[in-house]
Length: 178
Length: 168
Image (cartoon, rainbow over all chains, first blue to last red; front, side):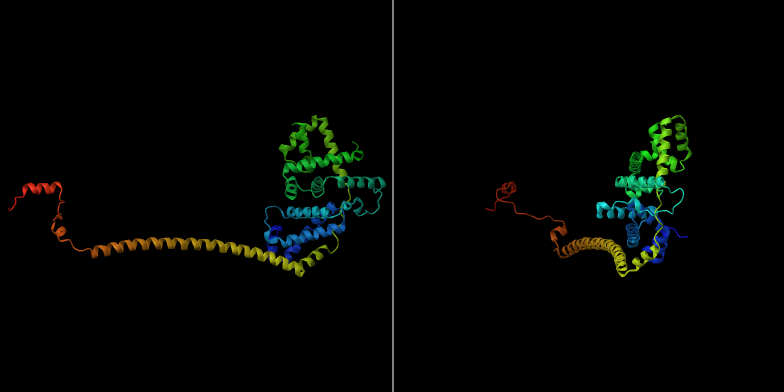
């Protein structure tokens, strides 16, 4: 199987089938991150599509200095920031936007309330803390990768995550039993 | 290990396989430090709560097809080819600039060389012409020096006056 970087080299020469392979391989990462950042399926699809098209348009400038996945997350993160800047303040991530799960014995009212509390707490974090928390705990990026995506140092990532966790701990103190 | 260092490493301790040289000190510290044990328990509860959030819905059906359709739209192709061409023309222009610089430097060097050569040749030629056209000096050729008439009040004239016998 060809690596992402090899595929990008072919995309730079106009090979659309190589581009399609990249889209198939990374669609879930782009979509999940965009959905977590924006909390809305329509906006998330717009951003994820636009991210891939930007990669296609800029393929001839791509330098494989970092993993392709990091490059993709960086574009998705920037597009989400732009989207949120342009959108009205009322278009904050909507905790109810996540799809409802099939009813199960575990999916009781209390569990739903807990999930809602977590999503509201996440949505209330300052933008950069929220981005760092999502990239770390949902997308499982390392500190170095988060730094590359967000354009901050490793120490900066540590600080953002520490503040984010502290804020979430306070907001969810009842839930966490502190 | 101090508490602040242990707490700074806690996130990586829980989420990543820390290498042994980092894991051992934190585990030794945790055995003895009740405060850090509580911090670790709180972190684990927080991460469990975060992960209890529902996952995003699956990628919408037909996502790849929609991206590819947009990639094949004429304006997308034009925009891409313009970018590629601008990249190509930029690199071609850079190559031209480099070659032109070298050519100008070589031409300038050649012109300076030709000028210096011409000046040297001209000086040599003038010297040759001058020596060829100089009239032959018979006195110089026979070893005589020029005889010069001394001025009236000169010491030489006075000496001649004393030594010369008058014909009167």
